[in-house]
Image (tube, rainbow, N blue to C red; front, side, top):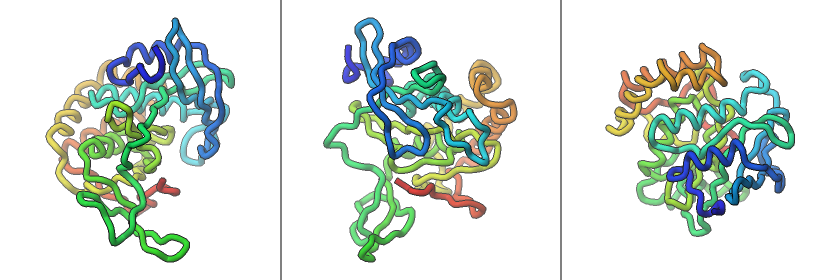
Length: 272
């Protein structure tokens, strides 16, 4: 079996075993990432797959997140995503590697013909059923819009981001997998106890949550006091887990997508 055969949703347990126990050979570094981000190949019992390995020692210190915690937050984003039943985050584990402990996530190959669902588009040519999020201009002064599709798969990702308090949902962190599923990656700056939601997916702000999101939130609320909360507590503080539960309850109570804050930038930079 190769990486093209291993699908994150259908083969979740097989992927987790490969991520945890597979031999990891590094291919190179993703140079655009702010933290050390390495692509590698995992091999176990004749199965191979590419992965993204982010060693803890390569994490850039941040003023608002404790040092050495970003890899664990990547794992927690996967754990919560799995608990939703939506499987929006590729399988992710914490393991040892060539540069020490770090997060290891299954690589998602995007089809070459995949149409982007988030990006900059000419301001006068916004595609049908797309939401404009922010205005921009290129070097020649031509107006553009940062926008995203009105796609229910993206709406689910927006709900997940609100739950985990994702401070960095860039457009480039939204991937379309070969199974026509949406995946979100890069969740190291999530689960803060203060509200820090920064995203390019603001198109549904203030709108009613869809029925499947309400059911999902009810399910999370029931899981957090038990095994789910205990698993998250392996990487998060007690207060961070408590604030996660509080965000879930607030979303259930309001029944709407959150609004951008007026106290901090609502869109990450760069947005893509």
